[in-house]
Structure formats: C-alpha cells, structure tokens
Image (cartoon, rainbow, N blue to C red):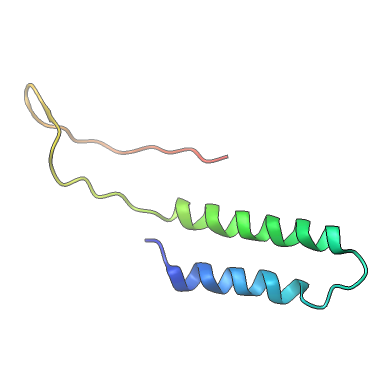
Length: 71
C-alpha cells in the first residue's frame, strides 16, 4: 500500500542529510535526486492493485496476477 507519510519522511531525510553540504553542491544535488527517485520507486513497488470488475472473457470474469517490472 502506498503511504504519503512514509514517502514524505524519506524525502525529508534526503534533504536533511544534505542540508549542511557546503563544498560540493553538484554532488549534493545528485545524492538528493537519487534518494528521491529511489524513495518514489520503492513506493510505486508497494502499490497494490485490486481488480474488482469490468473485464470479462467468453467464459466469465478475467482473473490473474498483474506482474510489473520497474528498473
């Protein structure tokens, strides 16, 4: 399940970790960007999709598992 609070905390930590950086601004931006991208991808991977209704096959409802790959 997606969590706004969990993602917010990861974003806050990413900025907090870099807040004191004074010598290498570009490296700091790279680290923050990587932490944010990683946190967002981790949240997306936690998403759960519940299929309720809508698709049908000739012999009844469509069932199965949604397989996803994020790289």
